[in-house]
Image (tube, rainbow, N blue to C red; front, side):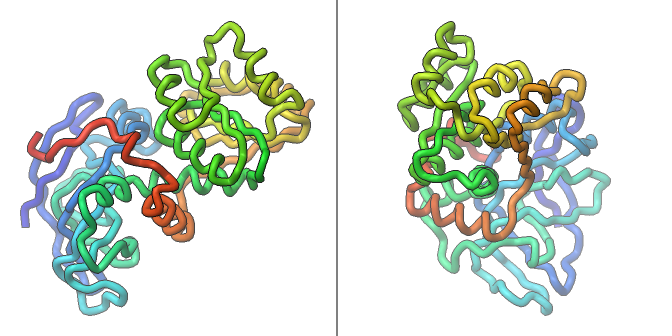
Amino acid sequence: MKIKALIYTDVNKFEVGDLTLDEMKEDDIKVKTIISAISPGTERWILRGKHIGTKFPCVPGYHRIGIVEEVGKDVKSFKEGDIVYGYDNRWKENIYRMWGAHVSYSNGNWKNYWFISSKMPDNFELETIVFTQLSAVATRGIKALEIKAKDKIVIIGAGFLGLCACQLSIYNNAIPVLIDKDPERVEFGKKFTQFSFSIDDKDIDKKLKEIAPDGFDYLYDTVGNPETTDKLVPLMKYRGKILLQAQYFDKEKCAIDLDQVKVREITIKTTIGIDTIDFYETLNLIRKRILKISEMITHKFSSNE
């Protein structure tokens, strides 16, 4: 069976091409794609050839919702017509899988898919819950920090992940501050918190000290710029926590000043990926509109476009 796929052929080059779907196995489900979503970080880094493990040519993407059209005889939890979330797939060509969500069809192991619904969600729900996996990275991050009510957290980056972390902080009755360099993102961040600032603001230290005179409890990094991180560490509390959740590909340029981290006895935490609990917690938050995803979607287009 021939399927359509978004293929990154080389650095900064892509095309929509044909692949040959591998035969189904007894523990496979065949899934027809309904919608996939672009993670503005992951797909970009892969396209630039900088993401860890990137090989060309490849099919990128890890956000995908589809409908089950066929089930193998050993499949335990799904039936035809179920709406599922996942990207497990196999094809016959020598095209590398950088997760491989942006395809028209897939044959993959049922254990690598999450159940969404037995009925087709409406378009609004599809367009928002398709971002569950990326949003769940923020869920995992906030849980890793063990954030509490009235705690103060400064979040580096008003992109998708930072905005999710901001919303989850508010949901936990904490006080988030967004920091970005792009004026448009700084302004957009004000839709989610009253505290959204540019790192280039000449009064940034003063403004942050007014919000947290005793220092911030947490620093949540989604960008990976050491100069920004180093500038904000002195504004943290003694024995606070830093979460490193950015992409740190450039070893020579992404090193932070560990001495000033050490003298404050700050705990550094990292997370990568999510688990099933993170996924379903986040799915529930999106469905309840606690996580407002629709406001962060910038582009919508068909595969033909």
